[in-house]
Image (tube, rainbow, N blue to C red; front, side):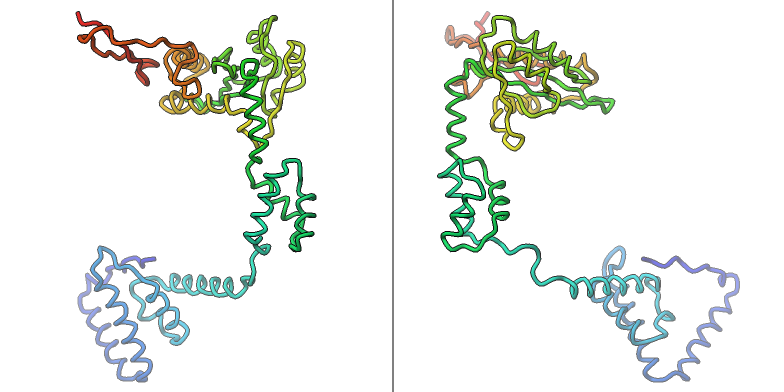
Length: 361
């Protein structure tokens, strides 16, 4: 933006600037009044910019517009330009040219016409009251009501809606009635100090939210997952359902092992993580209460951290869904006597604490 300082070659010859200034003043008597007036206007505008009380004079939008117009009206505008380079003024003019034609070329109506609020309300109502209806059926009903809307618009709007209330209610009832026989599995991804990604596979039961098994690896292959499931589920397995997502790592060999163990693998929709809410909540708790507060070094480090967190999770951490209890059913500790004092025991290196009563010595 700013022009470099001119070379001070004339300091060794003090008479040269005097003659240059004299010739410049003398040439003013031979110019036209219009040319001289434009030069005075340009110099006064730059003087006004330099007088602004800032550490560095700031050029405003009106200053740029002034020099763009002066460039178009006066051919000798470069001779009186001091505060910026001529290339900068040219760049301003080109930017204004692009903005002008961008505004001129902008279409009147961008994109598709917006769906009326009334139509959106009817689509939502029909989807909630009829969970089995799809876009073609709802589109047909809207046509019979006199609305001119395409089936593709209905389908696009249905994808934005949350699952119908009845569908979520039925799924929640199923989970509540069969939670003692349901397990879920998922992967927790953790970056390391060396910018590698570790995968922590865990299996959690829905009944008491206990972690049945976990392990960490950098390469979660199908045979490795099968071996982990063999360790997680004994031969006399009390569980009947297993919830897993559509991850490609849970391939056919994984589902075959679950079926052979007497369980029914149930895959959730990729767009509905709420169907595997128990596993997702555990991942969120582990991140907020452990992973976000430290840097993992390697597999052994992460395995040790997860092991300590699971111990704290089972015996110390209170769960709202378990009626303010822990998965291992932590007993109530009443105050033994009036002189007993409250003590805190650090957990997971001091990230969390457990509180209990201690009798006075």
